[in-house]
Every structure is written in C-alpha cells, then in structure tokens.
Image 1 (cartoon, rainbow, N blue to C red):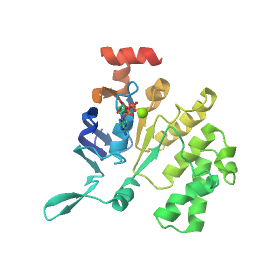
Image 2 (cartoon, rainbow, N blue to C red):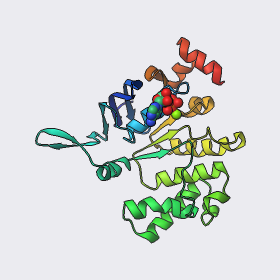
Image 3 (tube, protein in one colour):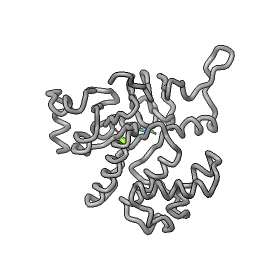
Length: 255
Ligand code: ADP
Ligand code: MG
C-alpha cells in the first residue's frame, strides 16, 4: 500500500505467566483500513497477544504505538514511567475490543449499554449520545431492540450490541477475540455480516477467528501463531495457498 498509515505498531511483545511463555517476541504492524486475521491452535497465545495490544495485559518486554504514540508509558526526567490505570484506560479507548463472551451490562437496556462509554468515560452529552447509540444500533441491525435488556436478545444480537458498544468510543481500530466462537452455528452469520460491513466501511480490524471463509473474503493478511510465536504472516491469498506445513495442518483441521 502506498501512502499507507500505520495505526498500530507492536514490537517484540513478550509475556510470561509464571514460567510459561505465552508470547515470545511477537511484532505486528497494522495499516489504516487493514483487516488482519490471527489464527492458531488453542493456547497459542492469540488472546494474550490481543490483550497485550490494548494493555489489558502488560507485556514484560516490547512496546506498542498507536498512531505513532507510545502507549502505556509517559516520559519523565528522561525515563519512561508506566501509566496509572486511569490514564491507561483512557488510552485503551483508542482500541475497541469485542470478546468471545459479550460482557454486556445485564442491568442496562441495549441502548444504555451503547451510551455508557460516551457518557461516562468521554463525558459526552446524553441526548447526542443516545442518538448516536441508536445510529450505531441501526448499523448492526438492532435499532428496534434498543429498549430491551440484553437477556431478551439472542447471542448473535448481544454480540452485535457489543460491537456497537465498542464503536461508540470512536476507536482507531477494533480488536475481535473469537467473536463468534461462543455462538450457536445459526447465529454466526449475522455477526460475521456486521463485521464484513465494518471492514468495508474502512475500519481497521484485528480479528482472532477460525472462520476461514471470513478470513478469505474479508482479511488482507493472515497471521498464524503457535507456541506463543508468529509462525507465518502473509497476504491472505498467499497464505491460503501456502505450503507452510503447520499452517496447512491447522487449516485442514478447522475446515
Ligand atoms: P489462545 O487465545 O491462542 O487460545 P491464550 O493467549 O489464551 O491462547 O493462552 C496462551 C497460553 O497462556 C495458554 O497456555 C494459557 O493457559 C496461558 N495463559 C493465558 N492467560 C493466562 C493467565 N492469566 N495466567 C496463566 N496462564 C495464562
Ligand atoms: Mg483465545
């Protein structure tokens, strides 16, 4: 891509839990508008990578820049000091995160879930935030569900609300961690469709998924992980035809 702009740059991320190395020296660059799919067997470090990218987990080593700004630290007397949790939370709003489990507030209506961040965190006007929430809900096809509580919705609908909620913070990029793997099979398609539309609208996305068809149709690049390491990183069309033995084996297993 020419004149492309790097939205996220992660260098040499390393994360251990006890003496287990969940992430070993992983670097990743994401350009504006790019959709990158991360694949790999269970336990390969995909969730840890996403959680490190938005600093839900602190990597022991490595650094992350969002829009060329180093996140998680502030310079002080020529040194880099880790940010406190409040400042960190504020930087984290640049990245919308959608989890396998939707994590909606069960005691708030759908529209309240989508307004919560803008009103409470961004201190935006309530009325304007309500209107924006309704717009976002219509983007995910749920404006008619706005006044319901999450428990009245299907899993697929709840996940679409979670996507609208993440978008309400105007993120610079969206991180998805297996957003459809907790759903009944018949509900997967509606969530993938919303994600496809989002990708087409130009959103920058990092998606951990085993949905090969989604990856093939929508993603620009595939990253394959195993044992906490990046084993393969290629444009999607190349990756699908690659003869990389471990990735091939993985593809055969999930297809
Ligand atoms: P994936 O998402 O690819 O399935 P994860 O990133 O969740 O893999 O986990 C990678 C490895 O790190 C797993 O073996 C998991 O048990 C371990 N792990 C992840 N989070 C923690 C944690 N908070 N404490 C201890 N071990 C963890
Ligand atoms: Mg995971």
